[in-house]
Length: 538
Image 1 (tube, helix red, strand yellow):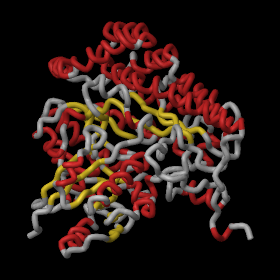
Image 2 (cartoon, helix red, strand yellow; image 1 turned 90 degrees about the vertical axis):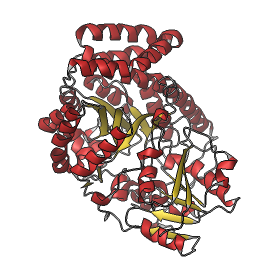
Image 3 (cartoon, one colour; image 1 turned 180 degrees about the vertical axis):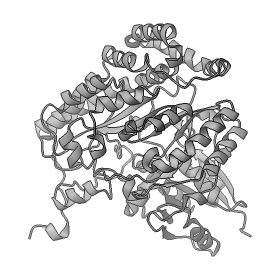
Image 4 (cartoon, helix red, strand yellow; image 1 turned 60 degrees about the vertical axis):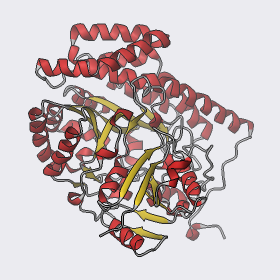
C-alpha cells in the first residue's frame, strides 16, 4: 500500500493579453476562466487512491504561501504560453525545498528549459506514472521519466477527477476522445507529441465520463479537446450514435464543441450526426486562403475545395466555425491581408484567431529553419516576456519577406476583421439561416432559462458599456428572434467572442505598430539565427 502522500497540483497562469485568456468576456459571463485543466485532473486519476490531491488553477485563484506548507510535492506544467509562470513556480518551490514535478506538452517539447524541476515526467503519462510513483516511494527525489512516443493505449485512461473542479469557475469543461492527427502540417507540434495515428477511447469510456459529469451536477457546454476529432473518422462515427442516444436519454444536458479539419465538409453524414448530438460549433485551422501556401506547409486537406464552399456546407448542418489564420509563411506574397479578408467575407466567417507564424519546438518547421540557418535562439523566460503568445512573439526566425511588411499585413487583417459593421454583417449571414438540432420545446425553454442570466449579463454589457456593439447586436437579436429563434445561442456565443477579441485586437495592433516602428528606426535587430552543426559556417 502506498503511504498517504499530499500532492498539490498547480496549473500555471497563461500569459496575459493572449487569445487564450478571454480577458473581459469570462467576467461578463460570471466565470473566472474559459476551460478547466483536463490534463491535470486526468493525471490526478492516475495517482494512487490513497494520496491526497488538491488542485489550484492560477488562472482562477491565487496561490498563497500557506498553500505550499501543506504538500509533500507539487505537480505543475502546461503549454508554451504558460511557461513563464511554470518556471516561476519551480523556483518558488525550490526556495522552500519542496519537490516539484513537471510535465505536459511544453516540458515534453523543451525539457532543457525545465531542468530546475526535481522530476520531469515527459510524454503521455499513462504508462510511465507508475515508474515515477515507484521511484518516489523508494525515496528518490529527482529523476526524468520519458514515455515511448505514441504508444499509450488510451482505452486504459481513467475517468478524469472532475470532482477536483469548481464548475462555476469555468465557461466549459473539457473531454478527450482521441489523440493524434493523420495530417502532416509543417508548423504543427501535435503530430510530434501524439503521432499521426489517432488513438480513440472506447464508447463505454466516453459515456462513463459523461455519466460522471452528470452525476456531479454539471450541465451545459462540454468541449472535446481533441486536436482533430475526426482524425479517426471510423471511431468517431461509431461513437456518435451512442452519444446521440445518451443525450436523448438524459434529455440533452450538454452542448458540445471541438476542433476538426476542414475536410469534415466532405462528409454530410458525419456532420448530421454531430448536429444531432448537439454540437454547435468547432475550431478549424484554415491558416491561409492561398493554395500555394497550403501546399508548401503540407496543409493539403484545405485545397480540395474552395474554402467558402466547405464552410457553407458546415453552416448548412447547423454548426458555426471558429477559424484560425496565420501570417508569415515563406510563400506569402504582398496582399496576403486582402486575401484573408476576402476569404472571411466570402465564407461569412465572423471571427478569426489570427497569429504570426511561430516555429514551435520539435516541429518540421523548426527543423527546416534550423538547417537553413534562420531560426532565432531562445530569448530568455522572464515573467515579462510573451512566450507562446503567437500574436505578439511570433516570427521567431529570419523571414523571407521584409518583417515590417508581414507585421503590417497582420495588423491590417486585425483592423478589418473586428470592425463592428463587418463583423456583425458576417455573423448575420452565417447564423440567421442556421438550423440547429430540433429539440423538444420544453428542453429549449429549459436551456433558455438556464442561460438567461448570461444573456442579460451580455446585453447589459453591450447596452451600457459597448456603444460600438449596441445597435448591431440589438438589431441582430431582434431579427433572429423573429426569423430563427433557434439560432440565438450561436449569436450570443459570437457576441461574447467580440466582447474580448475587439479590444484585444486593438491591443495587438498597437503592439505590432510599435514593433514596426522599432524595425524601421533600427532599434530592433534580429537575434543571431542558429544553424545545424553540419551546416555551420567554417
